[in-house]
Length: 167
Image (cartoon, rainbow, N blue to C red; front, side, top):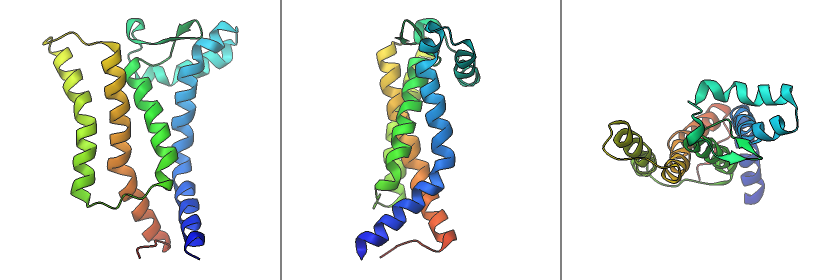
């Protein structure tokens, strides 16, 4: 019986997260596939895949990965951040975070802090940034943001629906 309750809880969590997960995944896939669409001459799909990321990222060519013969629609940092957001959001309903709030937030802060330090020190001219570091810090921050926000959000939504399993 416990596995039935767990399956019900995971199903509820996915139904809560789908409105957030779907757009994040679509933007991420679009950013990765924009050069492919351009290469194939699919201008409508390319324009659509490139439109939203243009509002979310500077898209400087020297900071965008090359895939499918062209530059992705997001820079290394943003692409890694949104890819890790997609993965973390997809996995979040399956995982249980049985730690205190301050521990979860401390870990999330530790995952986001490298992005802040990397971006700030490069912006201030203290050092030269590089795309590998941008990608790593972006990926860590994506997981950190999900860790900070999603578990309490899901717990709150489960309480509102009256189906939380806090045994």
